[in-house]
Amino acid sequence: MKRERRNLIDLRSDTVTLPTEEMLEAIRNAELGDDVYREDPTVNRLEELAAKKMGKEAALLVTSGTQANLVSVMSNTKRGDCVILEAECHMYHYEVGGLSAIAGVLPWPVKGEMGILNPEDVEKAIKPKNIHLPETTLICIENTHNRYGGTIVPPENIKALSKVAEEHGLRLYMDGARIFNAAVALKVDVREFTRHVDNLMFCLSKGLSCPVGSLVVGDEEFIERARKIRKMLGGGMRQAGVIAAPGIIALEKMINRLEEDHKNARLLAEGLSKIEGISINLKTVQTNIVLFDVGGLGVTSGEFVSMLRERGVLALPREETKVRMVTHRGIEREHIEQTLRVIEDISRKVKGRRNPNLLSPSP
Ligand code: TLP
Image 1 (cartoon, rainbow, N blue to C red):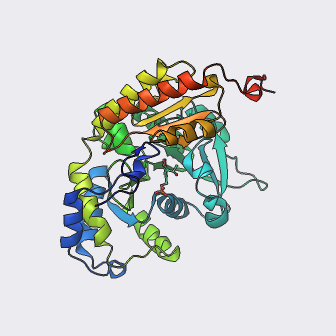
Image 2 (cartoon, protein in one colour):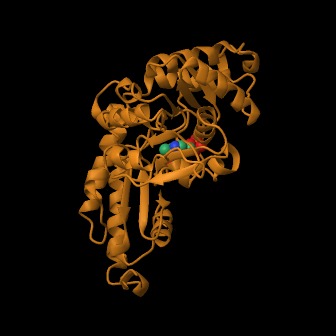
Image 3 (cartoon, helix red, strand yellow):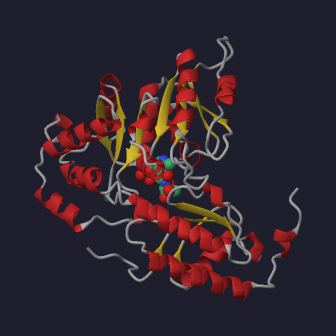
């Protein structure tokens, strides 16, 4: 297995992880069948395992996190419904508007704190029954929360939201793309996070190191509906056991090691907090995502990321002066130390240089 750009330290995302040797071996040896006929034994095993791990009745393998969210929203709602979601969530920002364009729902963003929705704010956002208004039928949460820097939505908050949902006859859905990061960080069983939601999705292709795939999880009836909608969206896969085989290994062996990613993220964040010109809120560094601001260096995130790239480190530029780095399998302590050295070097080089636009007060 060869990685392109092998000598770069790639901190853009945990989606860049490559499969382990054991995963490749499992792909080679997977028992296969046509999954549209539900005859792929490896897919069936993965779906059963995922449902069991999450404490739900059934699961469905889909191609990506984006497809998982779309299939789930469509399976939980009808066209024209109103869907409450956290204002910074992935579904609202980065899924190409599929909620409106394909699911035909009205996304209703509610601002949370570090990704955590206040149940009272959610309750206020539910539409009353009125001829002029769409019907609110679903609340969506994201855990861990990507745009807030991998923050955890704690089980107590999910429970409180589920009460609001229940009282108003709504469903509660969780984009749990990185839910195992949350469980490992709080040292609790993942079911603490899943027991109060009606259904959820999680990704195999992020910190768990699989090349492809996400799972939608919920009750039998929901998953039956999701299976049909996945097919409508072109996601009915045939010998999908080649995707499921590494997924089984991920669920059996790759969860506990996420702890290492969290330690490396901490190390990176603490190192960054000591570098002149960088500001970081260490409270948001709860899992494997590190979000920081380079405005104090007088550069934009785009300029900073280019300087990093020239020095062999890849990161993701976010709005204006924000930069994201994500730790994952393949990033070791020495890579973090090297990254910090590179950023110290950049900080020294740009010291004194100021972009006047960045210094003008915001409107
Ligand atoms: N996030 C990706 C990019 O889209 C930015 C990343 O590198 O973090 N939910 C959450 C919370 C996610 O972070 C992502 C992916 C998705 C859904 C979508 O998953 P994919 O990329 O598999 O469609």
